[in-house]
Image (cartoon, rainbow, N blue to C red; front, side, top):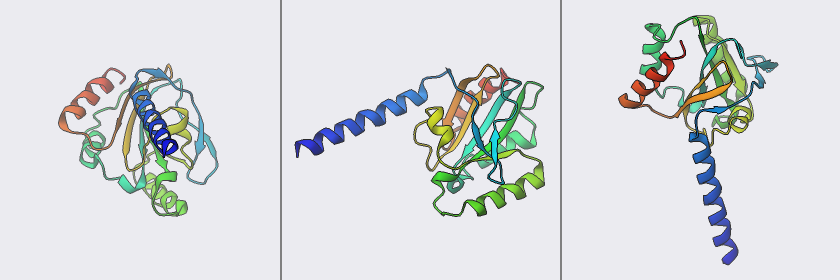
Length: 173
């Protein structure tokens, strides 16, 4: 019984430290290898050249923040010479074990709007960048061209968080 209690405490401490670490911003992150839509190795584009707006998406929650993301895209709200946006699909947390299906859906979106979409098959990004648990979340990340993670939000954004994000992102356009 004591062992179970100790294990629960250790788990709670690890969960708290991971969560707290994920909120400690800004912090340095590194360019890394992920996969393209054909499951071939790919590095994060524009690294060190531009500030990066990255949508790290669990396909189960692809519609979180849909209206806000649509607003950003349609109004070109964050376009500028110093910023580029792209998506990374968090394949590991997809509830249906069909990465090929997700890749095909992402390829269709890319063909429709020219978006750059990459894939993370095994929590490579969330682990390397210490993002914590990203399951069931649409995660919005902003990485400066100096390689600092300066903004992160997981899940649905309320109006106050949307304003906070836009104010931060405006500094990097």
